[in-house]
Image 1 (cartoon, one colour):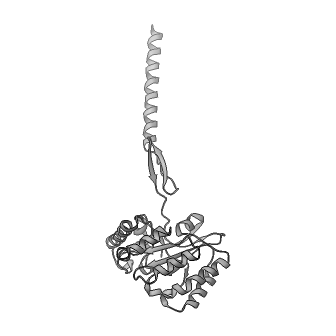
Image 2: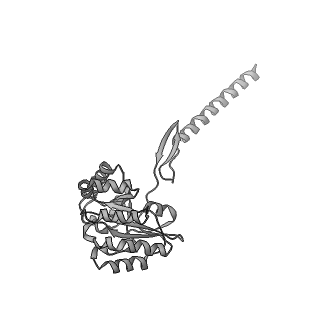
Image 3: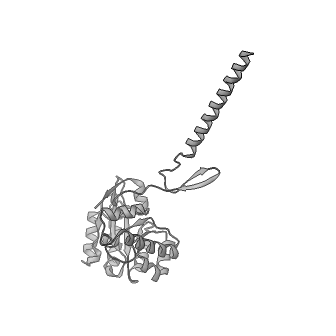
Length: 265
């Protein structure tokens, strides 16, 4: 009889211990981190797909470290309608299927057909802000407002939700970069500046880009009407880089291919 009572007591204690272990394991599982380093991956949770986001690279990106002969042609557009069409024509004629365009909000709103053409042709679209002014001059609230305005304009016009940004005039500091990173944006600068905005002449633009470009380069050009010489220079830039064995990729593809080279200021 005593043995039966001792056995029942022991069994009860084991049952309580077993239930405690189960509850503890359930608590750990519910708090487990299901995030992933892969972009836009779908994680199965309770029969539902949950999209997880790729971590945003810290700092401003200038180039990537790679042995592959790949470069990213990038074009900023903040105003005008004379340059974008011819530049898109040249890219198409030369068979360049990958490039990245950074669009300002007001330009996108006033030139919807050109913005849609960039999207339709398969080129990557990034954010170039709303008011074309230096971000470091303003508080974080103003920066958030400006970026959100341009983000919404691009989304409404092209259906693209931007996650790359090039600040107006390329102006930034540590505070600005952190604010943009916190908003989910990768800040994209450049390693090779064509200086087409200085209008030095098509020959000098071509020479500068073709001689300075390196593997993993981000090349800055403009498709605004302030840089009409880019139209004459671009075909020779493309030919010159191809002759050197370079392939063209988008900024996102460039970042996915190698280690990034970034700076905070």
